[in-house]
Image 1 (tube, each protein chain N blue to C red):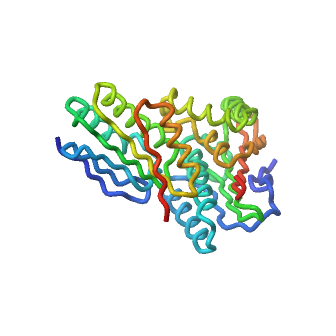
Image 2: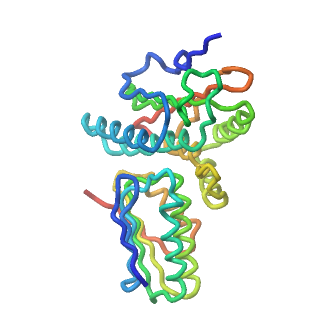
Image 3: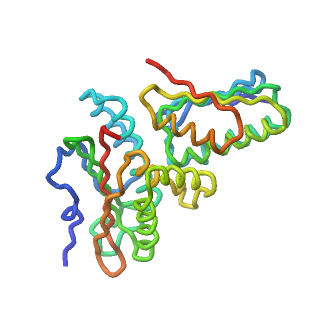
Amino acid sequence: MSFNIENYLPNQSDGDVILYYKGNVDSDVINHVLDTVEEKMVKVNEQSKLRKKVYNVLVESLQNLYHHVDKVPDDFYDQTSERFGLLVIKKASDGYRIITGNFVHVDNIEKLEEKIKRINRSSHEEIKELYKFILNHQRISAKGGGGLGLVDIARKTGHKLDYLFKEYNDHYSFFYLNILVNEDK
Amino acid sequence: MEPIIIQGTPKTPTVKFDASEGVFEIKGRSIPENSVEFYKPLVDWLDRYKESPLKKTVVSIRLEYFNTSSSKCILDVFKKLEAIHKSKNEVEVNWYYEEDDEDMLEAGEDYESIIRVPFKMIEIVE
């Protein structure tokens, strides 16, 4: 069976790709992506409110990859990336789309999905309260994440988290997060 | 006490903590992957300042961006200020946000609701 991580990318036809990356997500890559996207938004005179929101959400998505990705399956073509991630940024008709992808080990799927479902069940007010609760009560994890990234993305975009787990083999799934940042929110 | 003066970078803020003036400032961008590494010296410094603070301490937070990992560290900074305030010293936080940046205003309000220190929300109009 051949599994192409690009085959299941959501919203393939929607919008123009302004940045595409797959490979190791380290600090330098994050800096480069942030600089590139910021420059592109400035160049097209994107209004500052939207620009800031996109930048904020992009920081969180990239750092989610940085802190949380699981190692790649043994038979995956890229064995050199310590933190393998897929990132697509598009300018869509109504804003920007940030799509991330990464491997999740089967043991970690349930916990991640439970977290997303909890966020998606919550109203905007509840998400604000959840954010404050985690901020005030949870320590920074050994991996360095604050446990707030997904909550922050949902809060700032005002949308439910749109996600997909695609089974890679018995031990791994590939996880896609499809984020829309638009002007109304 | 030696002041802390740190020049900002694209991912970390400019910091000025000067015990002789009682005026502390954090401004710029705070989006490092490892925020604990950056903030720990600041929190430790405040711990020492707490022993003999000035009667009045004014803290200005003027951030353009901060990530969720910094948000926890900033809370740790505020918790030290809260302790100073609790021991009967005047502490004031000036939280700056740009006029169209509701997210930054809301972030300030989050802290204001958690930390028992007077906050002033200051809108920056360009």
